[in-house]
Length: 79
Image (cartoon, rainbow, N blue to C red; front, side, top):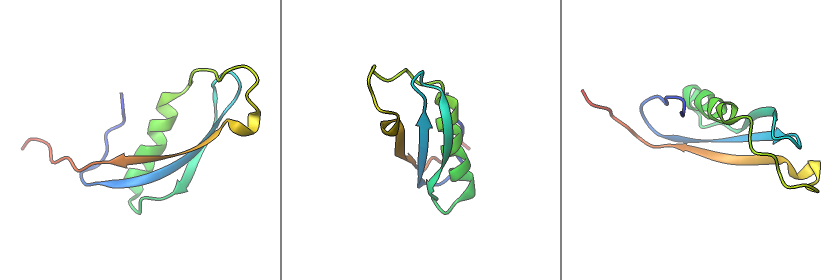
């Protein structure tokens, strides 16, 4: 279940790392959307996805750091 995003739209980039078991080691903003509420929702989305599936055996720890763009589309809801 994704965290609720505030009305409007924007894109935030989040960088995160996982360990060989798929546990989240860190998550931080790589690039702000310019809207603090979107930034918080993007970080919350990554944190809520943890733990992730473990990577295949033999994957180097340096390859377990990812940067992902998270885009929130406009949604006006129902009045």
